[in-house]
Length: 114
Ligand SMILES: [Zn+2]
Image 1 (tube, protein in one colour):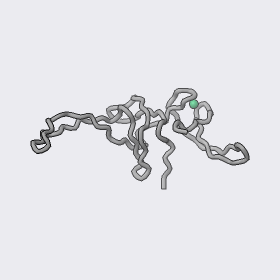
Image 2 (cartoon, helix red, strand yellow):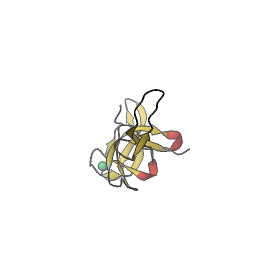
Image 3 (cartoon, protein in one colour):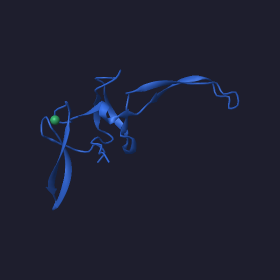
Image 4 (cartoon, protein in one colour):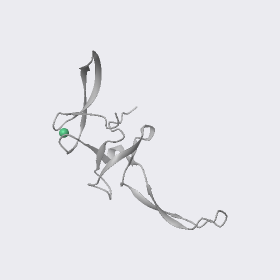
């Protein structure tokens, strides 16, 4: 089982594909698929056909497709750079906690949604 080092609400930068260099906020993480939904990244146009039964008009909608974790890098909130993530253990309130840290500036990266 691989572990995803990126959580929802993190900011990531895309490193491959047509969206290379784009920054976006992670909206959802699909652990089982090792993929993420990133705001504004990997958008595709879906052409909806007119449906005569429900009277729905034909339209084009933007849909966000998941990107594989290997295609993005976490952006460190402290130094603002795309970085690799390490783990270390810190002691807080008598408990040992596993935290992520930035391999560039060595700062702890807090979980955005906590
Ligand atoms: Zn950093």
